Length: 221
Length: 120
Image (cartoon, rainbow over all chains, first blue to last red; front, side, top):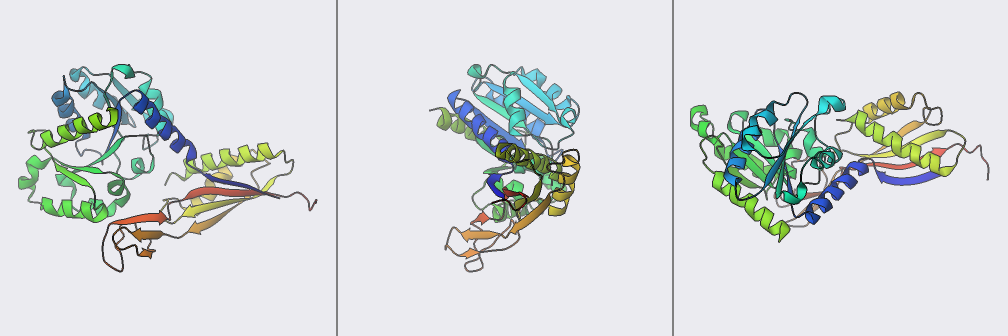
């Protein structure tokens, strides 16, 4: 006897991701998933972003790491609601999933929040495979990492409509051809919006902030 | 990647279907469709299925039969349909990389088979 099932094995994550999307729409807030390899500058970018959005958009942050609360501690001076997920308590998972975000958001006053930033676990492979229900997925590629990374990790760069080239302030010192980084991103994702940013110096941050404000406006309008 | 968590979800889905069927004899086959770009290695999936179900005699003896779904992509610029085992796809007709992957990322439980002893 054959029993037909015809079900996506990862359905439960995708169902929760859709629920997250619906929830955020109802609450007139946006969820942004920030991903990259470890050390590409996600926390630094968030730190600068929170500073520039202060007074403009009410933000909250979900930090994802296997261990430690170091990233959340770095951001406490921004005085925004913060939750740190440590996946070592969940089996050492190398990415965040939709259900983790759903549980974390319960810690915020979502009615008084405009944007929830999720800093995903540093990893160019797995986070791209798990939809968390974000309105926008953003990948960071930092200038020291090499122009080949989009070609080596295509799923990440293909699934992110926005790619931030970070640590632009050291491009000259590194002697890299940053145009090649952008060419490879566009090879994998021809419609990606590529922003060149230095969270340290502020270069290029205005375009990123404008993008966030426009995203919020178009989602809650 | 993540064959263990995928296998866990697979077992949960199979268990749900089995319990819902009211069957009293074990599952003999679990039919799964794995896309070439899904990132899942079938042998690891089978291996973790065995580990996770080892204490469940209704599921543990089942053969996990994997059908590989080949990649099918369509060029958004010239509508050419083609297949290639890569996420970085260029249209063979017009060389555009503006390509949509239509098939090849699936991870699906298609069906389970239960030995009903040849009963009608």
